[in-house]
Image 1 (cartoon, rainbow, N blue to C red):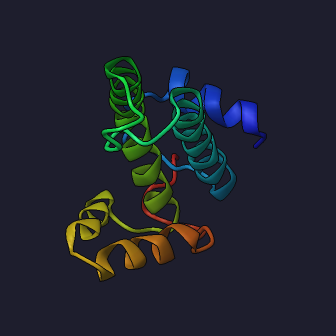
Image 2 (image 1 turned 45 degrees about the horizontal axis):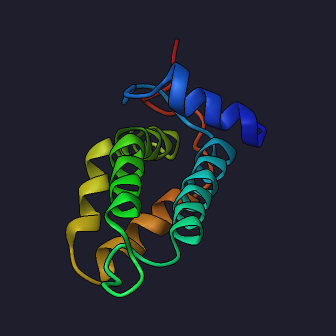
Length: 122
């Protein structure tokens, strides 16, 4: 899957679809897109939203809009990616454990696809 196909799939076709599977390329291309959006907003606004000296309310609003707009598709593609590794989407909640949860989730998202698995579409 290419960069543009991944963005189209995650933002248009499967915006809030938590069923099915997502390939590694779909997940990681969309993750890269999300990071580029956040970095682009920070560059255009001149700083981080928490930086009180260099930030305007307009850039804070732009950053919050981006976070809200990308939150649901980011979680959805991560859940579909976990399905591709034959893990339940509930494993996403492991990221709530401080320090180690995010690392465990990262490892799970990097794992290769498991064939056949219970989330395969028949």
